[in-house]
Image 1 (cartoon, helix red, strand yellow):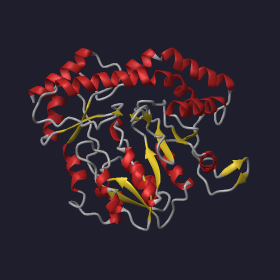
Image 2 (spheres, one colour):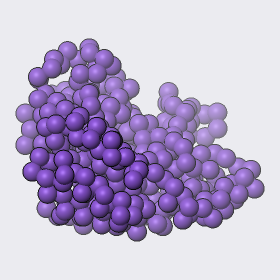
Image 3 (tube, rainbow, N blue to C red):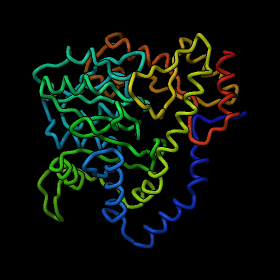
Length: 364
């Protein structure tokens, strides 16, 4: 049996008519940026997330970067980010001129360890950027308490957690702003690059929109040195077609994850840990194994696709050599990078495929 790490084919087959209708609607309107589709998606997505405002943009990295810029994060500032995350989290900080400061994760959840945040706060610290990694909500209550105590901003990185909840409240609705990616592989994915910022601050949303439109509040009037990062009509239309199905498809991901959690019994495998009062959406089902590379090869030989999220931590990437963080300085992120493996989990997996993966891992 061949099981890919991910495939969109079952979902696209199911939504084929709706996606083609969305394309035809945009094509027939001959309006491609900043039109009705964008406006409607922003309204519906903000309602879905329980926030007042949504601003579409080009991708998830831009969503974070524009949020930081709109909140006046700049040169000389420091932003606390998890040491275990995709590089886009750190790049968003760097692009503002500020410095990312890495906080180690909780090795059980892979998310930022809230007990390690306070020791990193100093006079230069301006914001905390928690990441809801792999679709698992970060522990937002103590994060918001620390932000209040030290008068810090909070920008949530929700790139992998569309529809996740923390204490019955949608992630992305806790901080000053939140950034989403709609990269095709996300739980809510476009058919190309796309992103969005959500916030309850109307003035902030207005500033984000201007910053993503060349710094312009109206045509040829530029109040900021902005960027070109807008959600095009076609991607907005595709997202509008998919959004009504998101909860149902997330529930199917939860069903698959539940089977993995209950039926994988191999003592060499460390399963994900879910904190109390959260509803993950399982963008990634992440396990750890001391013999990770051997396990990955074993599964590949059986036709099972896997992935490593992420094999080189940010502080050891060439791109961040100027931070001079040597190997061993962030041991938890490094440990995760050496042992983490992501299993197939996607909408449309059959029970036979799920069982095949479970049996293979239990035999390892």
